[in-house]
Image (cartoon, rainbow, N blue to C red):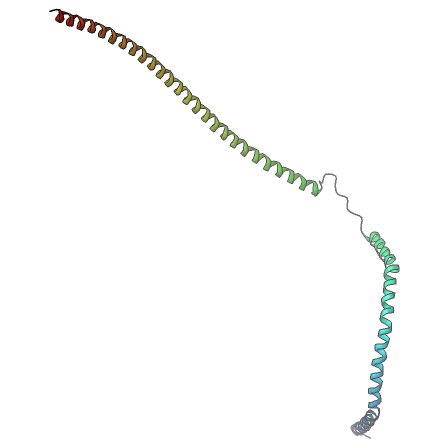
Length: 192
């Protein structure tokens, strides 16, 4: 028998077998379908029941593991990490730690700021001192001028007082002479 004929006959047999099996599967599905639904519902209920029963026990077991086993495991892992970690590289003795450099930089900055503030304050103090000296000098000059004017005024007043006395004396002398002359004139007229 030729090969193509065998293939056709084999393909026909396979198709017939497949169709027959599909029909049997449909019949069994119709017959066993309600049982499968019931089994699914029962399985769901039992699964929920198992979960409800298992959850608190798993939680308790987790607490026990956390309290007893976990610290030991953590210690073992920590020890293993220390063993695995490479030894730190030793730095040369000439290298200065960063913290010392940072502290030095901060100290130098603070000293610079302090110096600038002190210079500024010193310049302000010098300015104030100069203004104070100028004010004192002006007060001294004004006091000296006032003292000189007071002396001059006192001298003028004394000089004027003496002049007034002399003038008064002269006026008195002139008045007394004039009075004498008038008295003599009057006396001479009265006698005449």
